Image (cartoon, rainbow, N blue to C red):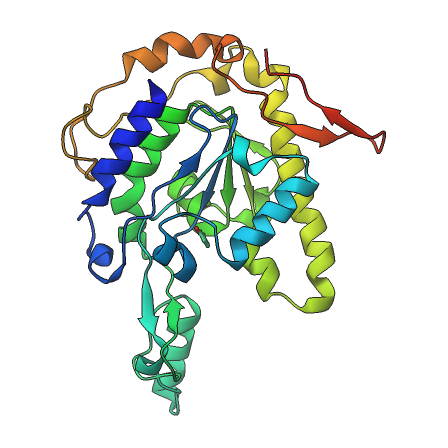
Length: 297
Ligand code: URA
């Protein structure tokens, strides 16, 4: 059921025009992974490689993510990986210029925030641009619909854009990283850094940053199997996530009138007893060797 829902959503998202980003992207990059994954990871937006291949996290940041997941004992294939924004936002390097004046320095600040400074830089490379709040908001119905369809036990936000999409613009990853945060999405959120930030960091700090990232992912894995997540409690109450539209209709739009997925509600109290749950996590505990965590009951 959920797998079909995801397929339908994926099809619908192909033609998304909720914001202008579709026009310069090669394709919509929808989420992928296990249909009922216990862990759902959310990145920012596809990068150059993802845009070309049509799959999330297949470039350098994706490789680092996969390494970190493996170190945390999580098999990527058992997770669901997606992005807050489904189209690649970019500017050609040769359309950027080097700021020269004070006024242009202001532009440099803008660029640091991800805004293009026309004319700076050289070459044919496509330079990633941070999506705006409006673009993140426009894409949010797809993300919520994915969360609804997958019904994860824990949502991992990779970086500020993902966290702010789900936790609000005031959220700072630096303040709440690695902690289980209550959410209205039917599963707690663990926010952590984006793997690209580790790649961008100073080389001599990379190992430490990676170790901390792995620690956050391990915390999410623990949470995905923790009894408190399985019991009914505030975190387990189903949120008012509404799928953007019933299946078969056009995909989510920001202002779409929507209905709850009752099917999903029915199965929800027994997250733990859902027969279609796969063993999601393998991890090494206390240095005592590799444990295959049993299928989540
Ligand atoms: N960065 C992201 O946030 N998502 C991807 O899919 C790739 C890189």
